[in-house]
Amino acid sequence: MANLGPRRLTKELAKISNSLPPGITLVSADNLEEWFLDIQVLDQNPIYAGETYRLKFKFSTSYPIEPPEVTFVKLDTRPIPMHPHIYSNGIICLDLLGSQGWSPVQNVESVCMSIQSMLTGNTKNERPPGDEEFVRGNRLRPRDIDFYYHDNTV
Amino acid sequence: MPPPNTPEEGLVATTTNAATNTATLALRPLMGGDSAAAALDLRALEYEDSVDENLICPICRVPFVTPVITNCDHVFCHKCIVQAHALNPVCPVDRLPLKLVSETRPAPKIIHNQLDNLSVRCPNNSRGCTLIVSRSLVENHVARYCEKTLVPCPHPSCNKLVIRRDIGKGCLHYDVECEYCEQVTQKADLEEHQDTECPNRKTECELCGTEYVRHKWEEHSRECPEAETSCKFALFGCEQHVKRRRLEEHALRCAYRVVGPVGEQLAELRAELNTLQERDRLKDRRIKFLENRGFPLPTPTSSEPISDMNLPEGSSTHEDTAPYESRDQYFLSLFEAMESKVERLSSALNEVEGRHSMMLFNESSQIKDQLTEIRSTMGVLGMHVRWLMNFRLQERGRAGTSAPAMSGPLSNNHENIIDDNISRRMIVNLREHPPRL
Image (cartoon, rainbow over all chains, first blue to last red; front, side, top):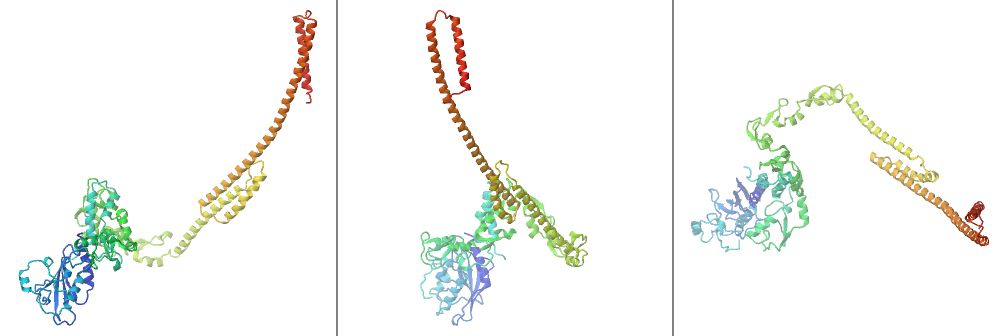
């Protein structure tokens, strides 16, 4: 049903325009295809303290049946967070965002919170193995990458 | 920027598709309504109140439409779970493996009932229908009753849509010029154009200075504070016209304000009088009715039916104490009384008939007895006659043998005449003095 996605996004937008959990702010949602949100890590994790990161959500017309495409965006004031599952081009390796891990009951807010907690729980100030090579070679969209979820500790 | 796919737009688009499909069929209002109902998307509805989170589908985030429940006790819209399951055969909430056919079933009745009770706005609210109705009734409203539902144009060669209210006005799909902005628009859309689009649709009231929508000047003139209107005591003779906002002021010093309350009371009294007169007329009729009932029955044996009549009359006194509330009731009682009267008459008739037949029987049995008596007497008489005749014949035979030569045909005749005379005399004698047997 083609109408499902836009209608649900309208509702989600109405909801997150009013209230969002602490550390998450809506930057822009000019249309129902691409939204930007800022997230902060609120506890005293030294890796992320004082930083704000920007997330880009891209929705297909099949959302929420299919997962949105979520990546970090690099700007002057918005770096890509250091994390063993986040590549330096902003691609996030998170099972929640793959077709197998996704569930249509998830929403923008819950995805942001998942990413927030993924950062909060991290203690390694490093990139994933093979990051440089991946960033250089990858032309695929994140959802088409066959990630190997090698690390289930986070 | 407004969201590009608001519920209204979605609905209009779907109804258009459905209606063009049925445009070749007979274009009765209900036909169009049916196609609109088929296209009515419950997910596009606007809900009047905020809906309990428990009634909202976790997938589409609107109140459930045809909810199904899984074996793991999670509820989804049927369409949603089918779509989600096609991608990933697990329950979207707890990610347990899920078989769509065997492990889902329609949600319990109580969930359906709660959903049915949700108040929604009529999906035609963008066209001006302000109805708020429970969700279970909205389809019926849109399909059959809503004046603003788009239905196929009644004109056979026109395949456009028109709101149901205008269905009796023929095809309105011709171009007209808006009288205020000279823009050409279709007649069917003119009202909406003048309501919301026309750049010159609003004008300032010359009298009160407020803006109003032009083609609704009639409505405005009914409430414009500067428009002149007649005094509320006009009924009692005040001929003055004052501006609406000064109406109260005028009423306070209107020459007829003293008459006003009196007049109102007068009207009240008049109304009361009318009701009393009506009641009086009713009573009159009842009295007449009761009087008529007192007439004796026109039967010869009058004593018994009259004693009969006391009974229903006694019971009817009870009716009489209760006032007849309506004419119908009065006639009903009249009818009942008539019925009982007819019953009494028929029973009296039966009685009379019985008596008559008894009388008849008594009389006729007497006559029958006499008849048999007479018959037996007759038999006895016959026997006597035969005996006498025999005796006579024997006598004659003896005389014939003694003098046959003397007696010729003449003498024979003479004898016969005598014989006849004797027998005739005997009969007369018998008749006068019947023998006691």
